[in-house]
Image 1 (cartoon, rainbow, N blue to C red):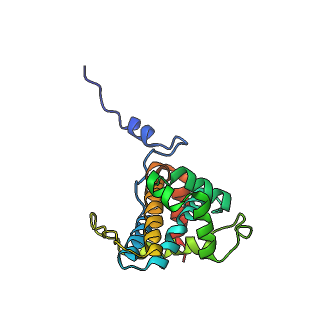
Image 2: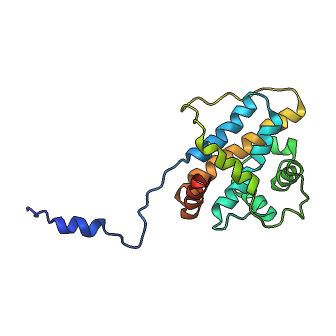
Image 3: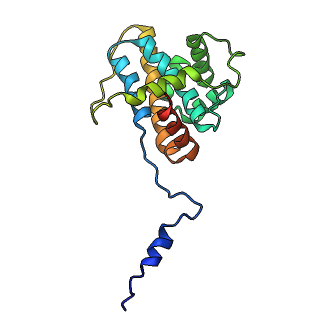
Length: 192
């Protein structure tokens, strides 16, 4: 049976229905570049810089998920507990958990756990925003993780790897389809 094409039906189908289409990108250039920068810092053995950027990832993720871009110590720990998936043998050996990761962030940020009350993580979001104009790495061009015998460097590689993997998992499984995250990323992209 032949059904005639009626152009008005196309217009009705294209009209806004109050719901946004279920189309979101599964990557963010700004976020991907931030993660690639951490991997590059590790590759070039800049352990401290890589660790500082990686430890900011939970605050960045929490702030991007909040309409007012706020984060807190408790939210940092909850994000780590949800998204960080360490190897059981690795965790037993290093003692890494959400509490320890938060303590490491406090040490790097130069603040006490009490000072880390609910606030906008401005330095972390500024670092993320600055990555928006950087050239992304070519697909499949991930630097290999360096091998080191230095205990501090090995811990930096371990922590960075855990947090980058968690951030990638968070973005792909949740943030790519979250309207608040996408709006906050867009807001950061247009800030000067």
